[in-house]
Amino acid sequence: MKKLLLTIAFAIAALSQTAYSQCSDRSIKKLTKEGLGTFIFESAAFKPLSAFGNKKSLIEAAFSVYSQEHYRVLSLCQGFSDVVEFNIYDTDRNLIFSNKSDKSVTHYDFIAQKSGDFTIEFRVPSQDVKNPNPCVAFAIGYK
Amino acid sequence: MMIKTRFAAAAIMLTVAFGCNQKSDKENGAADTTAMDTLAAGNLETDAQVQDFVQSLPSPIHIAKIFQRAGLKYIPGMTNSPGNAAKYMSPYSKSVNLGVYTTDLSYCTFNNQSQEAISFFKAVKTMTDGLNLTSIFEGTNLVPRFEKNIGNTDSLVTLMALMSMESDFLLKQTARLDIAYLSFAGAWIESSYIATQILKNKRNQDILSKLLDQNHSLGKLITLLDAYKDKEEFASLIASLTDIKTSLDALNSENTIAHEEEFKKLVEKVEKLRNSVVNDN
Image 1: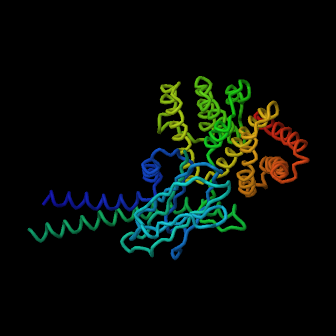
Image 2: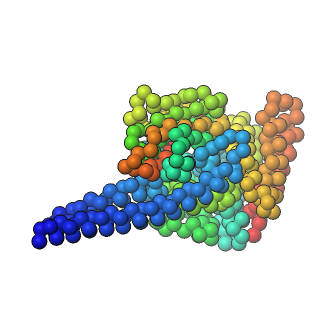
Image 3: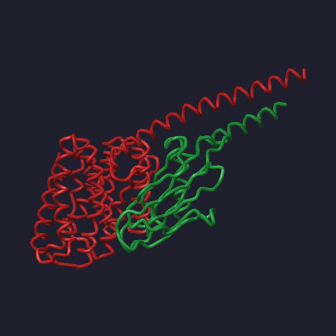
């Protein structure tokens, strides 16, 4: 019986920790390091979905690029009921990448054709009752 | 007995679960507050375009790398003196010179001047300590690791990138965006200063092209700093940067006749601002 109680307590603690740690800087840093591979860290951003308002389903962010530089954009969204779709637009707002057809893809590598702001857009699934506060996050790396 | 035990188990489960939820709510609340602060700051900074995240600026280390690839060589005496680090007293001068020293560190590292680089690494640490950003270095043991890898440029670049990541995460999570923007301003000024000083003596089309390319990040920086324009030091910095942007706009235009004169003006403007920044105690 003691064993059973301990197991249950550990399981609950672990579940609680997982839910909480989804948008912590520690977990995002770890995922950034792993996901960037040989790319060098440029910047990152992360926020719990609740910070955008409860009904937001389209989230956008801009990031700077320099002409002829090699970049990796890494989606680090965590805790959603489905894999998050992300789209990347160039400086002229042309869609240059979408993981819509294969949502298992979480990064995109490219060489910028001109300097300016690119946009990353996340289409997030409706909120999951089991995990009411997932994390929207991304990181940029360069070579 | 069995019923009592099961009841006790259920009670423990509920207590643990409720306790965890309470903690989680509190901590999520704290995270949300930070996030909302960040969001509020972000809202201040954007006008025409609605952004959900605070706008990110390029890494000063990356900018230094771009210049180095364009042919920017190391010239002794071009950087700020690491010995000045202890002289900066105000949060403003510490923040701006944090960026200056980050660029100097990158400039030396990419040009294999690792002995100088360690001095700048320590100067960066002095600035971050003075701004209560100690966790950037303490949690990662960066200084001894940097010293241990002197001479190995790849390892030093990896450590600089780690420092940059720790700093980026900390400043965003604690919503200390004023420090982030001032630091970027310092880095931008220092990299432009080194580039213009070198171009002043010897024209290099690749370096000039990369310098003119900095106009976009400068425009973005001015927009972000505008949220703090009511503070005197910020207002003065914005005015100087806007003046520099006027020259860069002209140099980026197709009217090449006036370029030589405008380039001289740009060199003077950058030099004046950079000297005021590094001499601001």
